[in-house]
Length: 299
Image: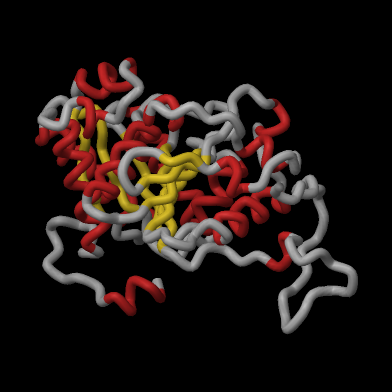
């Protein structure tokens, strides 16, 4: 029988050296470390732009390429990845945070090579994680990285404390926007705040819900131009996802679009984004240089 995990009560982390403070349990969060595998946070300036669809479909597309993916639903109040993948969690992150279950007990098997850490919905106490609980979550993921090549985290949109904290801790950040001005403005605001708070690497940009490739390219060009002019940031374009009714139809079927409608324009777009992530090539398709494996690990 699995040992009951103690609730994650707020408190300071101990500095890890050669040992633990006297009397500290061996499974205390202070002994954990953040993941060593590449971690990608997927976020957006506002909700309703297709962020969770992007996370679910890219994870499944990566799995089809042979990547072993841990997909984490950090939308702790409005979880949806379980619905998009068609899985039915018995337990979720709320049960882990309360100490009722271990992380290993709440992980679900999804489509090929994809495992899901599900979140609950409608829990006011999970609206924002304090620094301690957020750090526990990040370090807890490090306990699940055995047999994992990539961790994708669907974080809350906007300038939430939880979303910002997880994004800053990730190796890479993907910011999703649409051509609509409110989404465009909110995405830029998010990029600006992340930059001001010390994000080391420029976020990668994805444009969704564009009617044409020209509209998508124009949107990406505009936000990259503004970021370069006012923030001195060189944003990289990861790709775009066109407006496609197949996405909504797949959601109603509780399947990712890449499986439900593999020949749809949206599925092709998600798969192209997954290939760029998995190949490790320079994110910007216009660039001809690629970072070495060592550079990617050190970044």
